[in-house]
Every structure is written in structure tokens, then in C-alpha cells.
Image 1 (cartoon, rainbow, N blue to C red):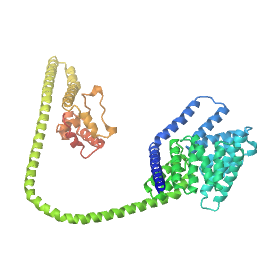
Image 2: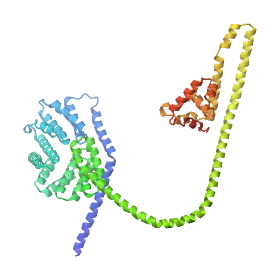
Image 3: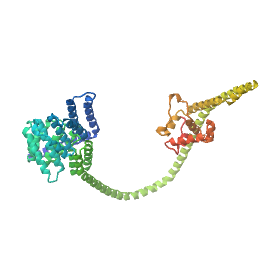
Image 4: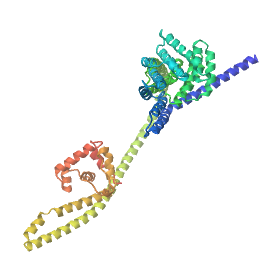
Length: 541
């Protein structure tokens, strides 16, 4: 009895450890998915380093072919169209040449990339161009491996059809050929021996072979992802869901860690979670799997996801409906409790009404005081602003008036002298000259600009905040105390001068010009209807 109890405790402890380990694996997978862009950036940097290493160098035909192979290997499980581009170039360069072995090696690689994306007929036609008897041992292994893969991919598409068993049988045939020639202990030998053994019905032996071989591989490599994904399939055949989930997690983690976008484990994990009823995580992993398949360009994976997506969405909708039903039940309970509370609330309201009148009077008094304080504050601000404007403008325009009077006296003396000396032509020329008037206007504008910007130092910046980005005024160091005609119109608006005729008289412009400027400025504003009111609200400080 004690022995049975002890055994039970050990089983419980083992289960708890498995649950903890699983939690860590899910956390690792979620973290890698969250850093998807980082993994992609590292992959792109590695590829860029290879390309940059060959940039600007005149490569021999041999080196060019080798560079294409390196880039193909990087893109093979990362991005279909780029991998296809580089290997297609090699096939095109080598087809019909005497270098048959290199052509065969490139053709096998190209057949792989075609198989992955679901172009089975093109892959099969390309493989038919190769005579395996003319290849060395490793090339024949690669050739048979690709033939096996092609049939496996076709079996995935033919699942639940009479052709499924036929494609599996063909894959088994090529696995036998690999086992006969591959070096014992190599990845090709062990993987094909294990998969062949599993299909014959001995899953335990197949599992033992791959689990013994797995420690030699590193997570993040494609071979690690394939071995762990295959182990998940073996355990699925044994209906050991715990182990299947464990190896699917290891495979998915390896795919994410190595930026392997041509993958299957994350989708399979999504299906497993869907069957379990965990629709949130199933949907999240399915979406990530779809995102990666779309990035890679695999039609095969996208079609496979298309099969299970409706099931995930249906499960999600069912869970949402269940949640809505539960919410409705809770709302009914809350409503009943609320009815019981209504009586207490009415009694409380009676007590509140007794104090409400007094409180209302206090609130009204507080509101009145607040309004009075706000009015006083506004009046004080207006008085301060008016004082600043008076102080700035009175001094400047007294000085300007004195200067203009002095100029007028000098010109009057000049006119008298020229008249006295009967120099009528010179007198007429002086009377006709516009430069003195223009100088006076320029001095007036300059004094106005300086005085106004002293009162409103941030005026141009505040105006720019009211205009769209492409219509803002430039502020250069040498124009810090200078306004344009448009800004002077806005400045006069800010000082309370709104009449177009008055603005035209002050700026010595036509009424039409002032009207046109104001219309254009409104058109440039972010808020056209309130633009001029917003200008009048610009503070002096």
C-alpha cells in the first residue's frame, strides 16, 4: 500500500514538472514571436553581409555559382522568391554544360524550393532531367531525399484522399534507397531510417533513433526543427499528446529562433490548441503562422492554414457566444440585486434632499465667486496687456512723430528755399519724389514691428501653430524683429483693429489688398472658421 502511494506521488510530481516545463516553453515561444522583427533583422543583416562581401568584386564563374548557392541556402527556408531567383540562375547557367554534377546539385535544390511552394509538376519535371546513376554518393542521397520530400508534400495535399497512401509509398521507396547508400550515423541515414521504420509501424524504435540523435543538433537550425517536428508526428501516431505538444513547441521555438519562415509546427500547434478549446492561443499562433507563410510565399502552407482557419474562427465564435450568455446571466443577477438596493437608494435620497438645498446655495455662491474671480483676473490681464502696449507704443510713436515732424520741417525749408531762388524744376522734382514718404512708411513699419514683437515676442511661433505645416512663416535670425505684410495684418487684428479700411490706411495699402490677404490667411489656417478669433487670443507673455 505504501509502495502504491509512493508511486502515485512520483507520478504527480512528474506531471507537475512537465506542466512547469511546458509553461517555460510557451513563454519562450511567445517571447520569440514578440521579437519576430528582431529575428528578421538579424537574418537580413547576415544575408547583407554575404552580399556586401561580394559587392564590387569581379567574381569568376565558379565564385558566382558558389555565391548563389550560399544565398540560396540562406533564403531556402526564409523567403521563397529570393531562394528561387538565385538557384534558378545557377540552373540556367549550368544547364547544357559539361559540369553535370553541379547542374544536378542546383536542379535538386530548385526542385526542393518548387516542392515547398506547391509547384509539384514543375519540381517533378526538373527532377526527371537528372540521371541519379551519374551522381556521386552524396548527390544521389540529396536526389533521393528530394524525391522523398516531393512525395511527402504531395501526400500533405492529398490527405484524406485515396492518393495519400500512394504518395507515402513512393516516399518510403526513396527512403530505402537513401538508407542503402548514406553513411551510417549521418543525419540522412538516421532521419530516413527513423521515418521509414515509423511508417512500417514501429514508432518506438523510430522515436528512440531520433531522440538519441537530437542532442547533436542546435535549436535554431533547420535540421533541429525537422527532427523535433518529426518526433511530434511520431508521438501523434502513438496518441501521446503530451509528447507531441512538447516536440511541437521545441520545433516552433527553433523555427522562430532561426528565422525559419517555411515551417509547419506552429500551425500544427494551433490545431492542437484548437482541439483543446484554447481558441485565443490557437488563433494567435495561427495568425503568426499565416504571417510567416505569407512572408515566405508558400502556397502549400497557406492552403493548409485555409483548411483549419474556419474551424478556429467557429470555435472562437462559440466561445464568444458562451461568454455573452454568461454575461447576460450575470447582468440578470445584478439587476435583481439592484432592485433590492433601489429601496435603500430612495430612502437615502430623502436624506440627501434635506441637505441638497443648502448645498445648492453654497454651490451657486461658489460659482458666482469663481466667475467674479475669473472676470477680475481677465480684467487684470487686459489692464496689464494694455499697459504694456501703451508703454511700448507711446514712447516709440512719440519718438517717430518727432522724427517725422523734423523731416517735414526740413523739407518745408527746402521747398521755401527752392521757391525763393525760383528753382522751379528742382522744386517740382522734390514735390514729386516719393522716397521721403517711402522712408517714413518704412520707419513706421520698422518701429511698429519692433514694438509689437517686444510686446508679443512669440507672436510668429503662435501664429504658426494655427497654420498648416506647409503654410507656416519662416523665422530667421536676422528677421526676429521684422514682420511681413501678412503678419502686420494679423498684428493689427491682435491689437483690436478689425476694419479693413482702417488696416489699409495704417499699412498704406489698398482695401482690396487687405481683403485678399485676410482671405488667404484664413485658407491657410487649420481651423478656418475661428482663425481670427484665435489670433486675438494670443497672449503677450
